[in-house]
Image 1: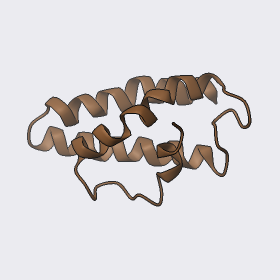
Image 2 (image 1 turned 45 degrees about the vertical axis):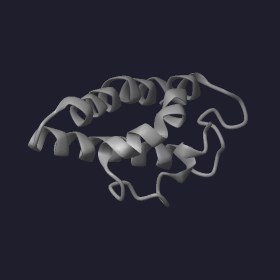
Image 3 (image 1 turned 30 degrees about the vertical axis):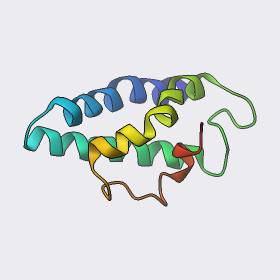
Length: 95
């Protein structure tokens, strides 16, 4: 599962963020949707844990660490109100 999540972050989230930042029109909207989809999936994987690795920092935590660092920029890029704050609050708290 760790490899799947790491690949999801590295490929799908990065591609989606690229579309949001540099795409135009429909491509930008598609990127917004994909970004929210990946963040919600990651939130579900976190469940009630502080880290993806449970109590210890694991592979996915390292790969995902930039999300917490860049969360404000991600929110701004995808537009305020686009993400459901209650559903992705744990991803934001990882920093």
